[in-house]
Length: 319
Image 1 (cartoon, rainbow, N blue to C red):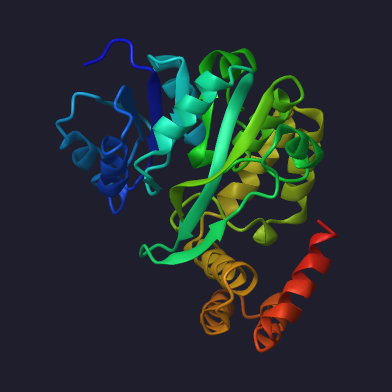
Image 2: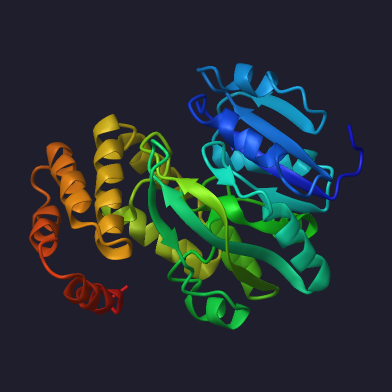
């Protein structure tokens, strides 16, 4: 085992046995080899631990903890990491072979940057391509204009300097579902960041993930999040309110419905495939039959792509 790797790939994992083997393999197949893969098993109750432990590569470290949530797992990983650069990665995603090499070489050539992300492909739970995400903000100057209203990075695709993250206090363990956005908001005002205009990973849209489409969140969640991002802090009382909100969302119907709603919108706005959009909207309505937006999107899906893109651009001005 390398006592001083150049990069720590930090992979939290919770009940990811369907996908984690492929995720691990995509890291081990990197063209850049001087790394450790630090897996924090967050109290999984399936075969996640067994599968992760089955890999014999000396670069893997597997740490088990009770189920305490993503932010706790990440903070533990940062504390235990051996490298000064940390590459975040999720247990259901896939790294492109050149990801670490590309990001590390950029950091070395541009030492003034604290965080870098990238563009990404997205797939559904079965591994089918859904769309390619091209960030609306790549340069630091562009990100400065938008980071308070929109999370600037795909969390699973960032590489950051460990010391800067630690000095910012790490991830706020009360800010469930936006612990990354809150952390970035504390750093961007003081350090340069950017997104590389290259696709370096494939992100899996997965109903079993903790993240659901924000359009399905209640008004109170949006209010708490917006306040926290603007101020760079989250009060304990607001954190407890979030906990109560998210506990109510631990219902499969909410996550499944949100998953199909998100797929439908991506097939409509980002990768014009109206039949697939309608198929997913119909599935959404099985979980949320009163959702008027889904009916509106079904009607919209029969329109030409050029008209749909005009509607999308118009709606984007209200975000």
